[in-house]
Image 1 (cartoon, rainbow, N blue to C red):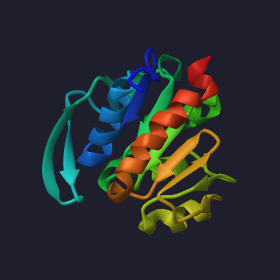
Image 2 (cartoon, helix red, strand yellow):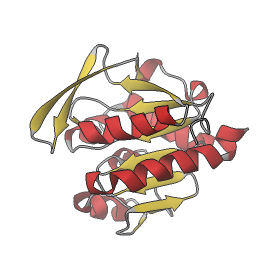
Image 3 (cartoon, rainbow, N blue to C red):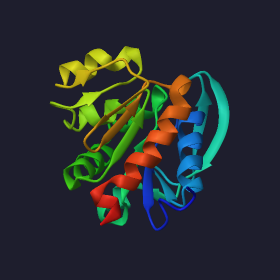
Length: 186
C-alpha cells in the first residue's frame, strides 16, 4: 500500500558517521508509504555518511537541529546506526533529551544496528525486548533490556533490527508498526 503513512511526519535523528543505508533505505520506505521525514542532527548544514563505518558515503542535508525540535511536531522516530553516529548522539544532552521525551510520548520508535545506544543512554530500554548489532548488546543488557538475536524485534512502541543484512525486513516492519501505532493513527 502506498498511502498507509500519508500525513505522518517522521523525525530521523542522526549525525556525522551515520551508516548511509540505515538512513537512506528506511527513509525511502517511509516516503514510499506516504510519510514525510525530517532529518534532525546536532548541527546545521550536512552530515557525513559512512559505508561499513569506514568509507565516506556522501552527505545528507539537515532539516533542523535536534535542540530546536519539538516531539509534538513528529508522529514517529527513526534512529539509524553506524558506530560513530549514535556514539556522538548519546553524548549530546539535546539528543538524549529528545529521545527520552519521544519515548515518554508513547509514539513509535524504530532503531537499527548501533542506534539503540541512544535509547540506552536515555534510560528507555529497561524491561524492553530489543535487538541490535552484536557489539552493543552487553550495553543494552546493562541498561536493563532483554536482548534477542532476531532479524526484527517489535516490543510495544519499539521496532529494532540487527543491521544492514536485515534491511528489507526492518523497512517493512517500520512501515507496518508506524501505520498501526495508536499514536500515528489518532
